[in-house]
Image 1 (cartoon, rainbow, N blue to C red):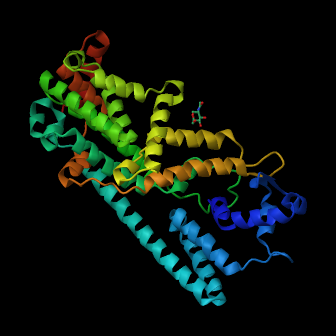
Image 2 (cartoon, protein in one colour):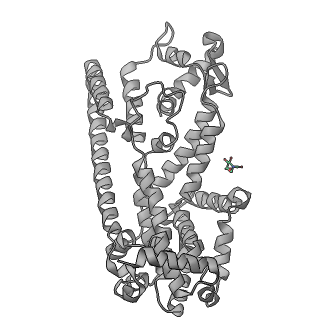
Image 3 (cartoon, rainbow, N blue to C red):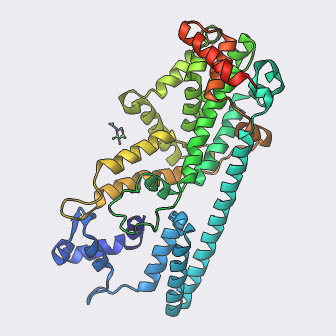
Length: 424
Ligand SMILES: *[C@@H]1O[C@H](CO)[C@@H](O)[C@H](O)[C@H]1NC(C)=O
């Protein structure tokens, strides 16, 4: 995080200095290639920030610039009161310098506090919604009475509208993920992190909330399909979700698309052969092909590049939407982080790796800030985030009730599940 900020605040001055004489020669600890920093020792980096005879930057504005970039890009670093105290101290230091910097620091702090309180409210709202979704009304427990639970088609039967509402949820939740959460979620054993304990207890809860949403959507899709008593009705719901998935693809909402495909491929849904026989699966097969994991998701990566290009030249905010298949994004960043060392054998910090990480996370930051252009439908949104969904066992049981167990393994499983779930 800090080095990404350093780049913003000091990158250009480093280059300017390089033009005159070679940094590598002057410090022996900073390596450049084509004017960009490849690696450096921590000492040299710090040295680089210290004024010299022929280089004495005006410190206060640089400090304000650095802190502004830091607080705007990584506001969650400042949820720690010790960080806030440091910030306050620095504000006082800078205030001694000049009026202009002092005012800039005040504004920056206000923006930061506003952002952090919005974050707190968001987290409370997600917790409250999850609590509602966890309530398990009796109506879910048995198919006979499940007619009481409204189903997705009674709430929304227009695939495009549903895809729009899914996109709202995706963008809402994406917008609260801090870029540092990617790194924190697997950086605990980072050797660079010698300030142990300082950042240790921080959560990556918004990232987790987003991953949970993906799982919820998959289970919701499976629940909606397994619940109806009539085969015709189940087939209609499958067809509806295929259309929703198609609309998600068109919008550039790859995360909802993948969650829907995942729900359709869960074994309680996939085993409903008689139901699937009534469905035209041509469209679904094309979508599955798009998201096919083989060759390292090459089809999906091509589609994602296409959506990214559309986004870069967009004329409307709808064209700007790119919502990546998030689990894969995390996996890519994870392997990038694991695959290269933070420090080179000579002890230098490996800037090439950090640039690459920064590139991936920055791309995400651009996608994250798109404002969803569609009208919100409160009722549909409420349904999507709070309606109870079956657990895995309940899904299996509902599925066996729809189409009886076909082999001994399924029969054994049914009787086991019946004993443990159905009996009050
Ligand atoms: C898959 O592709 C991504 C993006 O091109 C790349 O970063 C990653 O290393 C690849 N993974 C494998 C296992 O090839």
